[in-house]
Each structure stands twice: as structure tokens, then as C-alpha cells.
Image 1 (spheres, rainbow, N blue to C red):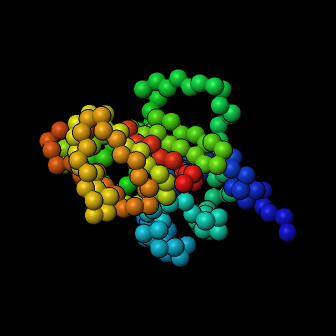
Image 2: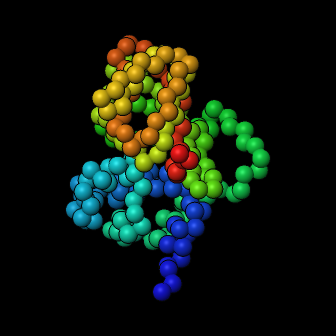
Length: 205
């Protein structure tokens, strides 16, 4: 049996996968739906929907099509917004005023994300973000279906990976499997800025 064109597109790797969650969130809010409302429509637990929307996990193809259908979105419309950009020209100049603010975790306090660069590569995709932690920043531990690299641009903080806590200072970096529950901890009355890179795909072991 032949696949639907949109399923061919999903399997071909020509889509920017890490944009899926934000796009679902945008359409959900445009429909005036809360996570619990979408959970009731789709039969998918709200905790899983939250992880998908926050880019913490990628949905399976059947799950993605269920969400799209229940949101009343035409698949061709949805996937056209996920199409990868043209092939890499050899260099990219990124102006600071082009960085786009986006929401990573609903309910987080003092977390400000800006997307610097998002792109695909053979076998996966990556996203580079600037994370600003304001005084009083806090959220729960989360997991991400990606590898993460964190570099401290300025300030100092603690970074928790499950039961391990690391002290990080300006210039320090941390690389880890995002499937480990994690959270930056910032208790000082200062602003901390982090460069965060997400790698979606398998690494050689």
C-alpha cells in the first residue's frame, strides 16, 4: 500500500522536526483550546502533549496525525510549515535582531528563550538557542528527546541532572543526554545567560 504524501515527507527527513511542538501549540491556542481540551479530543495524556509542544519529545507519526486531525488542520497546511529551508549555501550570517523569542515550557518563571539557528543535517537536526535566566527563575525538571550542550556566557548557576548537581561558572559547559531529567537552578539576584544547543538524532558510541 502506498503511503500518503505527507507520510512520505515525514519519512524523507526533509522536515524541521523540532518545530513540530511549537506549531501544535500555536494551532491549539488559535483554536482557544487548553492542553486538557486537546487531551480530551485526542485521547492523548496532557503530560505527553505538553512534552510534545515543548519540544521535549517527538510524536510518532500516528500520534501526530491524530493531533492534526483533531485540531482541524489540513495535513498539507501543517507540513508546509515544517518544510526545511533551502540547501546550506556554505555560510550563514545571523544578526542579533533576527533571533526569535519562543516559549519552551509553559508555567516556567524567568526563562527566556531566543532561537539563534535551526537546521537539519543528514541523520538529524540541531537547534541553537540563547537562554536568559532572570532572578527568581524556576521550573520543574524536564527531559528532552535530544542531546544538549550548555555553555555559560555570563553569571554562575547550578545545573541538576536527576540527583547530581553541578556548579557552573562563566565559560563552563555541560553536555548530556536530554532524556535525563534536568533543570538549571538559579537562586541569585542576577541575570544568567546560557548558550544551549539541542542535537536531535543518534550519536556514535
